[in-house]
Length: 298
Image (tube, rainbow, N blue to C red; front, side, top):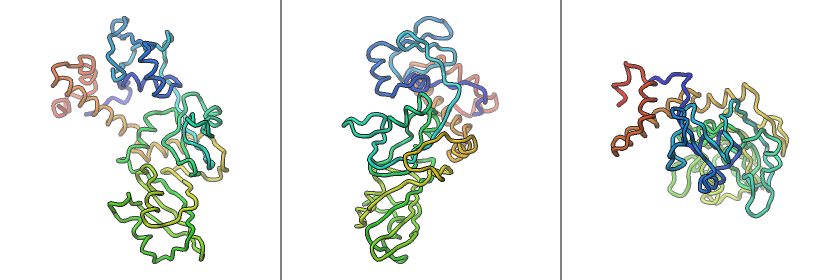
């Protein structure tokens, strides 16, 4: 399948609203349940019967929230923060503790954190307005390396078997991709550990399983983006070169685009199998596939 580079890709209603507004998913679901979201089809200009937030929005469709038409964001931005300890990686902490509000207020509207860091973990946290980039960075199959600095309350020698165990598959924990002993004293050790997936509490669970006393955990980099000289608590927008390198790390925009179209092909096929073909999607897909490949992709 050969997608046209200039084509607008249909997307779910909730995804469109998220990209065109500042609302988190929970608020979007709330607005939908209250009947505050309406869709007018580009082909007829009249209100569509929309069954749910999974409804596909096509180019030119008018999506209204509280009577105001939402416009697709034309420019995306990504930023990085050197997160301090004691900060919850959410826009609002349910317990009223310190959260990301002070930084989000200084970032462009629509920014949201890409993944999370534990409350006591410091270091690199990315923010973006680009849902496609965030999704790509968070997908385990992309294998974007994340490097962490660990401070342990014990001495590890270069030949300590637990260093090797950190990178070996185990039923007790998810192993790391790479580990390096940076320095050690009779009381402490410093490690650099690389993950290529980053599951919930992965490093802390790994340390507990191996009997290692972790004093502090700090994320240094995500793919090609590192903290550099960013001080603890400081944030800044990524430059063009950093943003381009981040996209290259997840395979580039065209690879993401091809994956999105492949997902739409599967969606259309499933709809036809149910006897409920999506006529608009079938027509759009037919327009995206070259004559040479269309017969091979079905």
